[in-house]
Length: 260
Image (tube, rainbow, N blue to C red; front, side):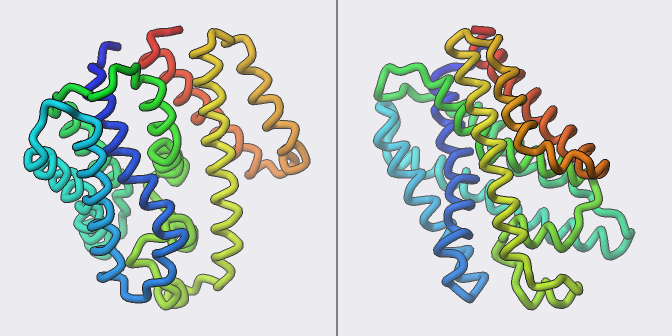
């Protein structure tokens, strides 16, 4: 799959800041600021600054003002998550159905817009592996969670999982959620980190031409989870999530790295 180095670097910056910064922000600074609107505006301002500075440093044939405009477009596209959430809630309230797949629109918009940006990277490097490591971290976790939740997300888990600025203790209490969400959130974070490391290992093994060692990664994870596999519901959830994570890593690795 031929993707230019310029496009790979652009998508790495766009997806990396959109999801990586969000995870870091709501896990640290975001919990300190009590006003959701101010919190979100500040988060997007930091997002814009980091994206703008990174692009100016890493690209050589683009004027700073042009990259600033591109960065603003990426931030606006990322902020469409607020519109998507409002539409989803309105539709769910009227029809009773939750169109959870609308969450795909934001990352899809980022990717499509990123493909239009074509400028020469300052450093002559192979950005394929860097792109994969970024893409298989937080963006892949979001994709897997959406797939596992299908189109009927559980509101308690959604609040505990997403930590979005419009999710608050009062909101959780209003839907009857027990306020042990911090414990649930910590367990979810550990699981997502394990999944990220799993996908990174798979991609690194593909890049180093050690595909035969992939079974060790899955086996090691299964041994740790073995005591819980007696629960049929958990076993099905674990099996589907693990296979989806592995297939995603394998497909991404072979497509981007060219089957190395």
